[in-house]
Length: 148
Image (cartoon, rainbow, N blue to C red; front, side, top):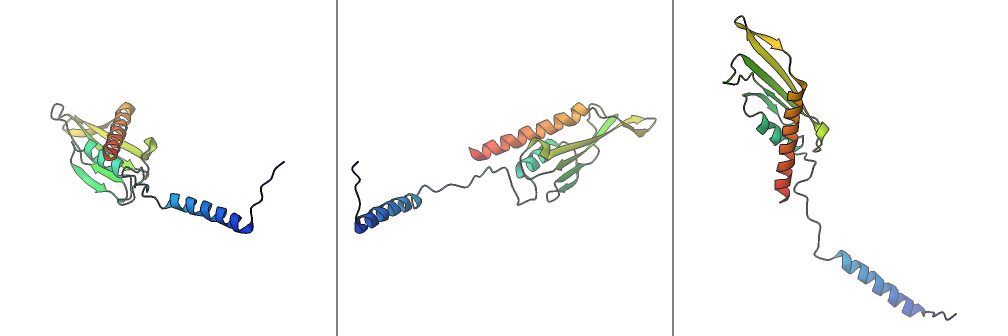
């Protein structure tokens, strides 16, 4: 078996060459860029895509409260002009800084007109789920637009 031994000077030269080659790779101009569409956003306390999507989704109703630090949006009662005998009130909560399906919750109250007053009525679970789905879809679209 033929083993080549390097002199101490030659082994230092090889080591120095390898060290310089590895350092050269670190100093290149290909630096990672910031992800403009990061799923976590901390400037307003909650995920900004979910926040904007939620505001857009409930914009048909007048807002009572919009707290971006706490992630809560509360609308006033809204009656659809085509059905003035019914009204709804929504509360949207953004629960996380991540853009995730379980980071948004919608609570809805519904009332119907009876005998000159408003009476509480049940809200279909599908209605709340549909609103959450709309918010999530809009948030994902906003994130995609930021990437492109």
